[in-house]
Length: 244
Ligand SMILES: [Fe+2]
Ligand SMILES: [Fe+2]
Image (cartoon, rainbow, N blue to C red; front, side):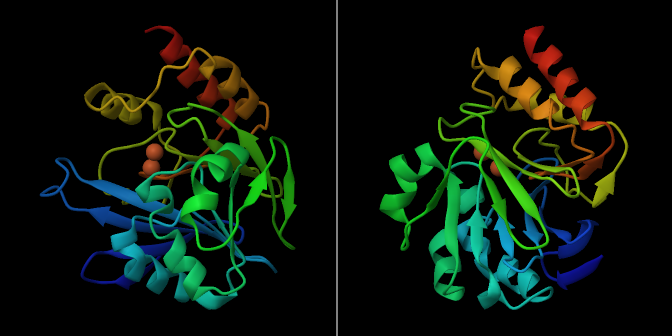
């Protein structure tokens, strides 16, 4: 693990082959219990960043990306849904990386991104694959899971990594880059305090579709990356939601 900013503790760690987690902890004085924001950098012929981080964190995240590859070499700025921590600094990235394009679902492009972003989005259809030259990512629509009509996820096929955004959000600083310990209980305890789920009736079917990708790495946006039988964990989350 490399710390790229000693003041904030922003750090970079390779969590799967060619996939780097950029983690910035948020001190407990701002969010009780602490919290963290992760972005994922996929190093390929066409490098992709999944989530930009909040706009005010752009200097930290770009410093961290710059420790792995030149920021201007980024080609894709992808994100799950339209919220500040997912895409708040999108235009800063588009300015810093002149060949980069926003990558999101069709609803996100239609409703928000093609209005707000300085360059048009590459709007991904459900099941569409983007070959990056090294990594291959498939877009999976997941409306309202856990929130946001426009929500979707990317599944990286070679490493079987599901970039699962806000699913399994864990409290704390996300100190362990990767864990094999249970993350369902910590994330359920967090959700008990701050329920960020929309409780859409489609959630079980969408979670089943994600489970069918059989991921072995779950790249969580908040907390540690998890390694294990992702299908079983996604179905366990579905059962918890069904029990409410
Ligand atoms: Fe979110
Ligand atoms: Fe988030």
